[in-house]
Image 1 (spheres, rainbow, N blue to C red):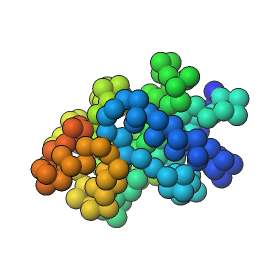
Image 2: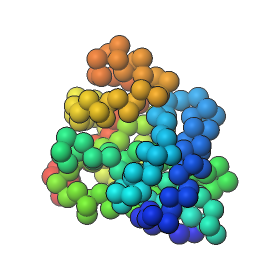
Image 3: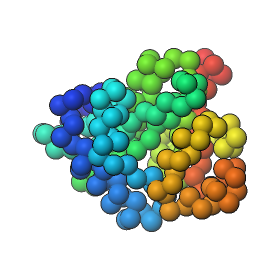
Length: 176
C-alpha cells in the first residue's frame, strides 16, 4: 500500500474517487458533500490531496481546502474504498494530510466537519477539539460546498450555527 501526496499520474483515479464518495453517502445515509471528478482533479493538480494506492487500485483519498486567504485549512473528502476499510487506512491518510497541511500552511487553523464517529476519533487523536461553527471559517464559498449534503437545509435554517455535523478545529497556535 502506498499513501502519498497525489500527483498528476493519479488524475486517472478522479472518477472512481468521486463515485466512491457518492456511493458512501448513499450507503451511510448521512451527510457527505459530493465532489465532481473535475473538482478532485484541481486538488491533485495543486498538490492538495493524499491518495492511497494498492497495486494500482484506488484505496483511499483526502484533500485540502484553503479558506479566508490561508487563515483556515479544511480536510475534506476523506474516503476509503469499501474493500480497504477496517484496517486503519483512514487514520494513515488523515495523518499524512494533517502533516502535509501543517507544512504547506503553517499559520492556518486546520478544521473539519463530519458526521462520522471514526473521523471524529481520528481528529481528536491528532489534537482537534470540537467547536461551534462560529469558530470555523466564515467564507461563504466553504459553506456553499455543503449544498450537495442531504442535511444542508438544517445548516441554512440555523443560519450556519448548527448542523448534524460536528465542527473540529486544530489551532496550531494553541497546540504548540
